[in-house]
Image (cartoon, rainbow, N blue to C red; front, top):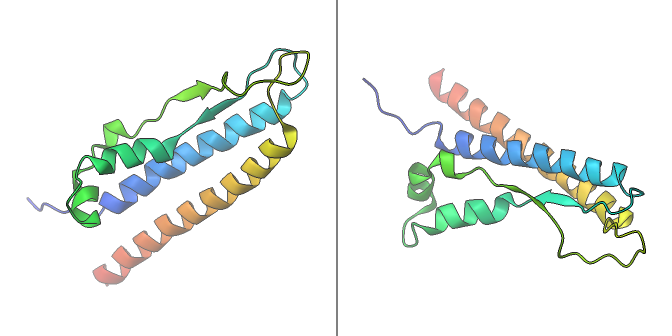
Length: 129
């Protein structure tokens, strides 16, 4: 039996890409509900989840941290942003301009993550040749 950690980075990048895709969907939903009275925006925070998981191994290298990551712990929760107070009379707290900027940013992040995953697979393919 061969034990390998070749896919550790790919697995973490995959979780990050899933979270990014989910965030894009949530932001698009926020934009769609920008005129819905009482609607509260929703979001997801993968960065904090990953930081907490990697932070458990404070004095080790990134390679060792990635090897020790428990992928079952990299499932961030969707939350409703009730703390973002609404200045609108209808109680909606979606700022369309902010959401559009966040959507564009998240699309770039998702594209970078998928490019990184592709690069990792290309490295593995090069090694196998």
